[in-house]
Image (cartoon, rainbow, N blue to C red; front, side, top):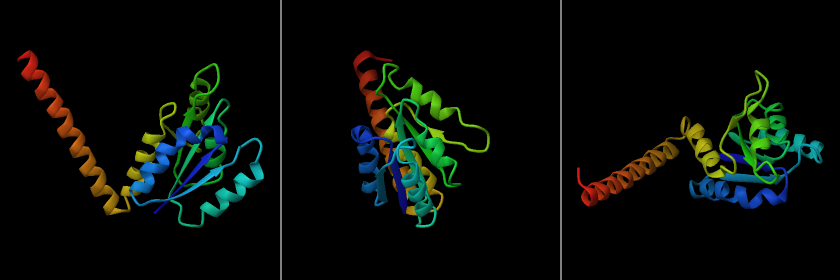
Length: 163
């Protein structure tokens, strides 16, 4: 079980670390790289080629501003690519979001919310759950816990404010 996480800049690391932590908590091997689509394209291509044959199941690519990284990754693999738009410009990440979701037909990138690396990790886990029963069962358990907490909160509101 392996996920590759690529960020365009080390300044993105604090926004990507939650995904790394979630995946590792699930026992997933995580290969993390800082490879800009614009400044390190040869190194990026070499890493994608390596990941395409080393058991990697999903890519997560985080980038801000022009945010070409997820699309460049998707253009070099048929493995699922999840894009994480990163805020950092005066546009607060909207530029990155629009860049990532506007992929041409045939080269899709699944895209989560701006700075949404936690959901990128959970989406990667859901993709992997198709093949890995232990991930599927743990995700189902977490969903059950979320439901129980939500219903408990609802009961508290009813108790306080009535029916």
